[in-house]
Image (cartoon, rainbow, N blue to C red; front, side, top):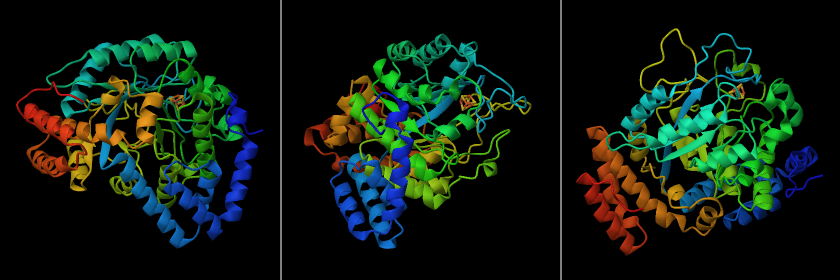
Length: 472
Ligand code: SF4
């Protein structure tokens, strides 16, 4: 039975409820009156239920779909303005004891080089990332209690935070490691992590068990209930995601929103972010062998429908997607993107040697960070390197209440401009810098409060003079 408050995976992601939702959506996909009512509700910017969202996802009516896309764009602007948060992944180790059939790190794959970075190697990688201008990382590692125990992850986090190179610093480390215990989540919290990210891969239990035939990840309930344990361990911000292509996208979409509803109902705070990865080619992984892959149109519709269903949740798209695809979904709801990513273990400091092959997937967007920043600014987006919320305690329900009331704009817009200015001064090419300076001048009048505007102006001048001691 469906019960969003339950702590049991099979009750908050009730298979029966997903099936009934899909049936309801199919039956109503051309029901104009109902679709109008759902769109009207979405305009209130308080979100939609998974059933309502599923109807919009299935909607076949061209005019209504135009309204859905327009609303997604408007909600994106209202909650996130024109800011895009930047980050980079850092793969620590590709040792893994699991058997995930869609991932080259699976234990039986003998074609790839197994590698785990030492603290010295991590130092070199972090310096290379800082030299590009990154301030926010997402660390990734396979599941391996011997090679990648929690102590190793904690040591890596410590190393990353400790490196201050020139004006660089990694100010927020998000963590994407396997489902673990409340005790270990407490340790991650104490290490000062930002968001704990764990992709569900698929919510369909039978498929999940087939796709994860061996290893601890085979346990569907343990994996699906991980966010509950993370929050019990004190982690305020969690990030959800599915790997589109493994199962029917309609199933994943409904279940993903049910998971978000569960976190809100049972733990009082919805997900901080939702990621929308699609399967990519990799060693031992051919996307064509997965029959549920989705095209760019469906991908865009999913992004738009998530945007209007959970308006206050950030949305992430990585370099799995091409420049053109990223451009399309940025307008529809994406608030955070990676840039200049390497999916190998190491590879930022020096390119991976030809005889090594440690990547988790082929990157689609291979541009440098400077090129990505320039591209965003040419579309009038403000690339933001801000990490202030987490350091100022604006996390969990505090962040959500600011976000839901729309007040987060007052913090984010000034912070985005100041961190962009910092990037332009320290790392940008002359051409990117010129575009950025013009954009900042254009944006200053849009800062909502006169007093805040004055503080920003003062700090922008200080940053130009070399000071990095500015207020957030
Ligand atoms: S998806 Fe994660 S758990 Fe599965 S094989 Fe890859 S690294 Fe290991």
